[in-house]
Length: 68
Image (spheres, rainbow, N blue to C red):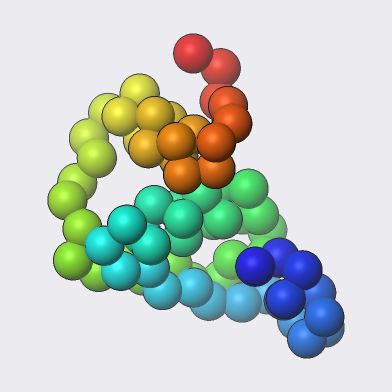
């Protein structure tokens, strides 16, 4: 996604994530907070505590993003 936004020469952008795509949208917003102007997540359960969020994003990106 970041490469697409870069190729479009956009400094900031908005992203919408639906269902499991919401986890990817959260991850993108986490990785590029200075570039994501708006984040919308639709039809997704609340992930709760930071640890739950960490596990979901790590699983979506298949790597560790936050310390355990």
